Image (cartoon, rainbow, N blue to C red; front, side):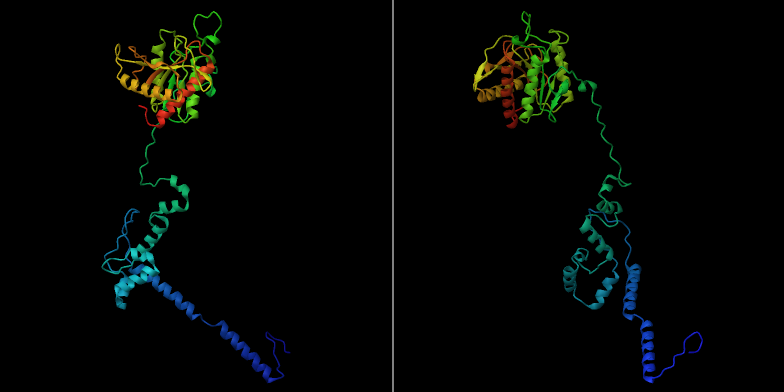
Length: 394
């Protein structure tokens, strides 16, 4: 074998040499072969893209989501192509409806015009509910968090400024019963019953020191405020939202109590405008014999309705009508619980001029026990719940 760049092959048999070179020629032809079918398809795709860019008219404006896309009046290249086929319009519509259902949405009634822009817009809208040219809406479909980002052309809405909660509304007295000692105890959302106690220190003889001049106490757990808290709890447990004011309206003495409780009631209605029933809870000034209901000793209840004989009271007729409904309901579920006729109509208005459904309710007397008081306000809560359910409140 000679020395050189390529080896010199000495063939011993001619047949082997011919097979070798035939194989080499086949490999050379295979390597130089041109994929004409792929090149042709690729070229047709490029030509079609060029025709679309050249012939399909551009849209001048964005189609809003709430309107249907309008087909341009200029015939498209597809319209001219279909016209050259001489295919009936009905046949073409059938083909398109079966093969490309969205195409039927953009076909003109009188001319067969199919623009790729309309097809794309309707396809995207059918899938996402937005127009393909609305970039913000499309991104929001893919990235829901973008919903909090407002488009630049949308004027931001001013937030309603909620007034700061008054400090007095958050006042706390650790000696008050329940609700963390909050002076304004709220049970439930949007209370419809408001409770306050003009004579906050009213108590009961069994719980005051012997020899006391009056049945009053500074221990809230033994006063009408405690009874009001039980009343509020009973209302809330049976589905009635309620607010109880535990403001001490006796802080300036007995004579000033109604003047102070007037402003307490006005504040309650201002802070909780959803209130429909306003109750000034008392115990009667004289002793009362308890009733026996279902084997339990229950303090008797009466309603005091003030008229307009001495001072204006535009709501006293409505208050009286509501007291009559409530007394009937109460007597129906707890027969014998009413003291006498159940309603005392008096010439003094007792702060009942603030709204319809404004009542003074007396539960028991100074000789009543806390257990009797608790049993009584439970029945009272049930009676109110019945009127609320039947829509019989002012």
